Image (tube, rainbow, N blue to C red; front, side, top):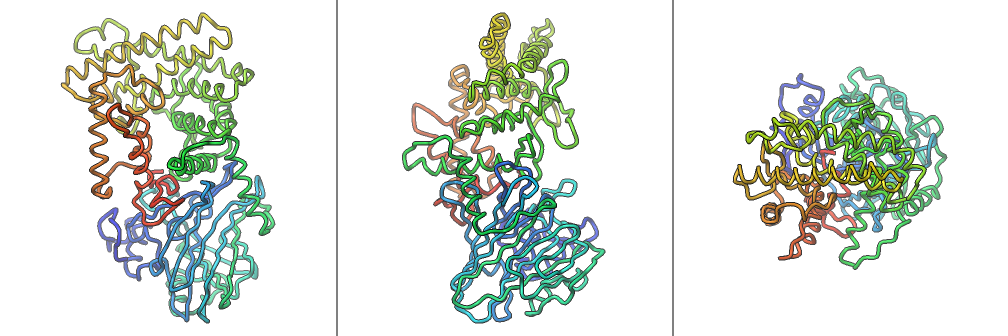
Length: 615
């Protein structure tokens, strides 16, 4: 694969026994570009999820139009045969698009010569009838001998550098059975409407189906059993000249596939419109794209849910961090979908410890024992946000014991830093703070006194005080409000001491490292409203320094930058200054941060629609 994008690793090694994925990197290097998905050339291909408002199951589609049918599952990859010539993603001009209103219906379009192929995935049905559909629509067919080929290949859309357990790169296919209206792939089925004119399978030792297709031939086998797990299949349709041609592939997730109907797609579109419509946003035209992106982001939050569990991503990040979930749940409340946060809180409360400790993250393996102290304040804030959204007193009363335990636990934690030991000059910067934790990735190797934790703790106590007042618990309300004020005073004093002792001109992220971390500090400003409490000069200088770097990235078209979109977008609200209007240009560039070549909703590129590879 001749590289056209920055490589993520050195050239494919010929030492092909290291891992199955490295083996495939080496194999792909021996074939023409386009025969294998882009990531086997060690290049990133961005992707977006496909799903329903109820979450549960989701597919992925990447820039080239390859669709991963299920988590860690195989993919459907399109090709064309034109007069016997194989046309791949590398031969076509590719455009990506999303519905203009921000609903999560992506389309990938190939253009080759005058012909176009639109790849349109969508989720049909609910519950046990949930079915992934992919429409392949060909138009402007001016040639006589055109055939559409959809292959089932043992590759995920998720790239190898996202490897975790069974995620990333290869997705084994052993058994394939080609039938009249469907193909069976191991224990799963792909249904076709209409039926293909030809269907065949091939084993890896035969070169896979591409070896046949490149010669204009149909793979010879109707059944294969490949011990290598690298079997593949091809379905082939003859495309009539001068007419629009559509075929639909369906992947049922459960035993009862939803019967296909052309009207079902319109129903799916209407369902998403209704889901995102309860709140009307009236903004000037210049801000309309931001609202569309907000709708898409909210839709992705819903898609990525697993039952009541809110999750940051559809694959590698299928874990429920309190910090992510309450913030995303609060965002959903802004579009009138508060029930998602309510369901999450009702589910997650079972994992709270008797002493009030709120675990930072839960996944399918259970509770993670990692010590992070931002989760306790975030939990209380999440309860306050759902009450602010729906004013449901019954729900608040049901959550009250959990809120009280979490608030009291915050006080117990802070008491550990209110002893005489922390009044000594050497340790005074830690006085009154929460103990060390690993509240973000940078602190995993060495937990620290993180101001991120403290600001969330303060806001959590303030929220607990407000909720206590609503329920008539005036004693608790007064005590927690007073503690929040003292906590804030100690935190600001600590920040001032670290700035003075370390001669800083910015707000540090922690005591021990005195680290430059504007993204963490941005949460204290944008989400938690502590801007007026922070030292003004260091705050302004920190944001100015970050903004200068951002502008340099613009000048360099973002080449070489290591700031991911998730971090950049989270800082947008912090860039407000009396000197200049900072947030507008920053927000616009954050949409373009992925530096893609095609437009979505009229934008040059969209970091919101196409997920960053970390997610």
